[in-house]
Length: 207
View 1: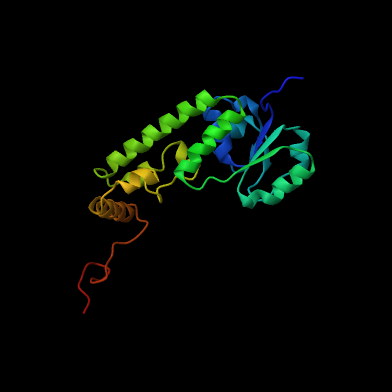
View 2: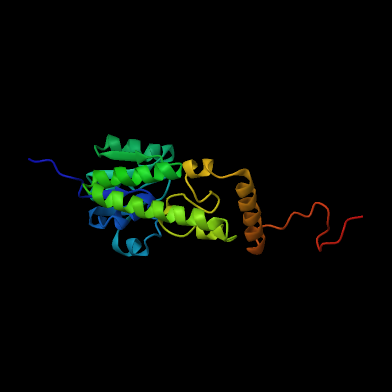
């Protein structure tokens, strides 16, 4: 029998589900996490077989997956039980933008679509550069950074919209300007109040 790529994949977290959809390889998915919301169609098309810290092992076994994808040590117990049942398990542990992009390329290679993975990564890197370049003119960049695929993969507005390599090229004055813009955007969104160390709640000087 010739070797083949995985054809029946269970995704225990949303990240790998969305990545496979973006790669155009969603036909391989036979089960997803109950917390999956992106892409919305995944919840309509795929059975839900797990939460984040627990899974329906019997349901997963019924699906006869040839690969199960999980995330970090938080799903170690699930991975152990599935491995004992004889399934192939792949645990990703992406914690940074670079690791997210590496995960995409690795997953693309696992399903025999490295070219699609490279194209997706190029598109995401272009988006990151555009967000970084616009951050200095647009004080609402934390919201902008939440849009798109990287938000699901853990790249949220709480993170700077650029890679560590880009961050090293930013001057202190630019970083301070970015921080000021971030505080203004946060105040406008009602998530925090301005710094009033010298003034009262309505702008009056404290006595």
